[in-house]
Length: 225
Image (cartoon, rainbow, N blue to C red; front, side, top):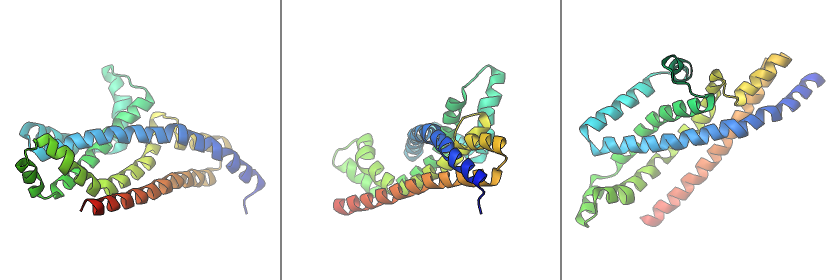
């Protein structure tokens, strides 16, 4: 049975943890993922176009950010760059790292989706007099994004949970709020389960939105076909 004291702590802490989730964790996720998508689409299109020098640069970027831990990247940007005279505030530093890290993973997802579109689609576009950019914007990219949607949605859900690492560079998000309450109340088990359940709540909402999005895309695909 939960003691009256513990029940009071959990009730009081719920809103103190949820509020940073709504004002820091969610904005951090939305901003970072939006920038990551810009990076990912750009990197994927460059690789798909097979521009040799730019393609090698993209491959190097993806290799570095997929091959090193996210936590290490956060520490390099926030604690390491000040040694070079580059000081970045915690929230912008987290946005930069999460965007670059997630952009590397999403670039590979989108690249694979682009390559899954039949080559005949590109040739057909040229036959009707469309330019390469028009073909990509109107034919190839819409089909690729529909294919990539489930994987990209999974990446977004994973990013919500990964934002807990931002507490290591003093970003006042949900996990840091929970840590502060634990330090004051000495109830780590209950409070860490509580913050875990809040993350689960956010992930569940996103999963439902993902399911709705996939259904709409399937209906749209059937109408187009």
